Length: 216
Image (cartoon, rainbow, N blue to C red; front, side):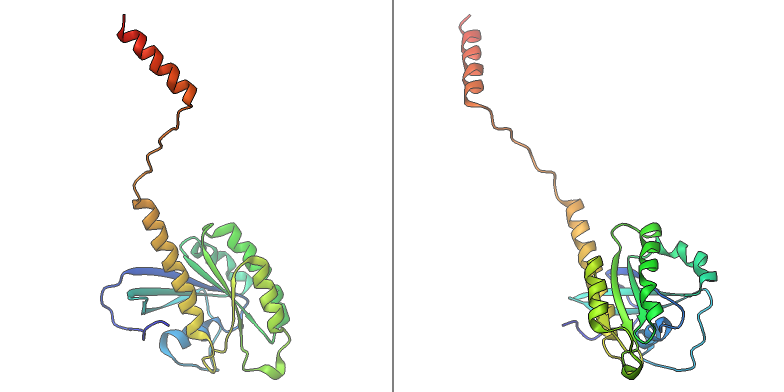
């Protein structure tokens, strides 16, 4: 389990850039506000363009600075957000469990990721607003099936009640930190020395030639 997060502005071991994407109104800004400031408001206006928050946490003994970008979900802003895909190290795909259209559009968002983001970007699927269970139209099983199809992790959250919000951000941050650590380790590992194994007959022939040479 991760240690208690630190919100100071001191040094950090890793800088991780995350991107929240999904249709307008699914609660991306509310998730970000809950995670960064531990607050929730029902009067959140629709994000215009790009906004971001920063929170420094401790993961496995390392200080990790999370820079989390919140994108506008409307079609008319999509051209603005595409430039931010490339800088993202992790992407949270958010849909509203009370809005089937936002769930179906996840495939479109994944296509955008495939077109614009880095090949090794970490992804996680988030079904938000589970506190509104009476209005739910997308089941947990549907969300899990879609996540399994793309080989990514899946969480259901509520920004209102703070259900699983910390877990989502900590999970993707930990996965990215592990990937970065493995990448650095692979880059600093000394190259292996290849020792070829000579066929016994070839070795014998070479030895005979060497002996003949020495006896001339």
